[in-house]
Length: 213
Length: 213
Image 1 (tube, each protein chain N blue to C red):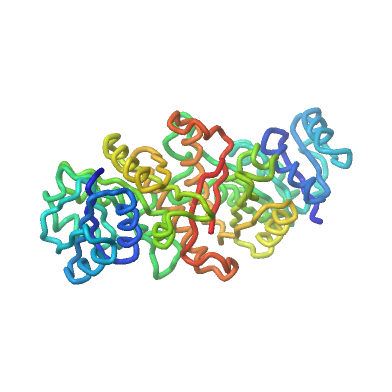
Image 2 (tube, one colour; image 1 turned 135 degrees about the vertical axis):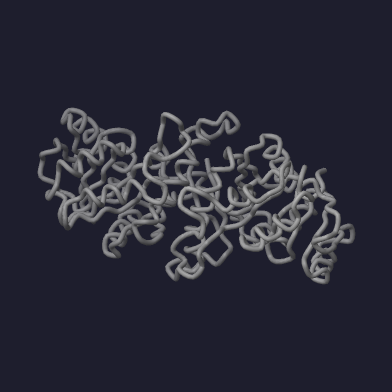
């Protein structure tokens, strides 16, 4: 199994960490605050290690389980430590001041911005931006595995993330190059607006976006 | 029940027409070629009327079941005949020469372009762009009603389309103002690319996009 490093210790770290444990992956949780990382690691399992942002990365896949601004800071700060890694960007760069647009320019994406900041040899992969944390912990929505949409400019990295998703009991959907992140981020922004829309009583940051046949 | 006019006689006209019959709506099919309109009307039911593009519109809701370029032509040609109507734009303005982008500029949408062309008093509503024709005929995907995403700048028009969708046995999801069409069109473009992706044997213009809880 692939080893996974998750940077962050919030709800999305818990969700993806839960999936990594299901997948049987070696798992490392890192956080600026090592006590928070240790607490989540303990919660997820005895084999899960933890550390701070300067700890050596044990994962081949590094998940930035962070908001967009923090993800930019971490990609910059870690620099060449991410070279050779498959780096998963989960962010939805929503302008929460208006909840009416993204903070990235039309026609681009958070993932592409992160790729521009990343050190040579680090491969940014968009994934898990349409899966809410609670659904990841549960591993199903409406009795079905979650769809995890994956986009990057590396077929190898897409395949590695898809294998992790499959091992985690979910359905990978590799959608193509990293520029497809703009469609993934745009639509999840729309889905997020529904969570706070009083017309949808059942939608409460608990929905799952699925391509059904 | 609301009366519906569908302009076009192709697969999407058949799909939405089938739903209109289920809803108990009065239904009119119009096409540049009146023989094609008559054939689809006959197929859909004895009460369904047909005509050509110059026929008086009997529907309060007018569905442009057309490709984007044809929809632009029809909105322009019909002009003030659409005033007072709720006009549904179903289009996905995909650049089929590359299958890598939309033909509308980033940050805008086919729906907004059609609204700019429409006569005063015509209300453009984005809807049915994420529902493939076959799924509309079937009325379910994986045993569940389809989600029909709806966006416009008129609460009244959104409500009218939502009522039609509910009567047709499907789930309306009113996502907000017309500018949300850009996210709806962007994501459906992505979903369309999956239909021709050999990695997804089951995806063959038969999928349904659904927000599950």
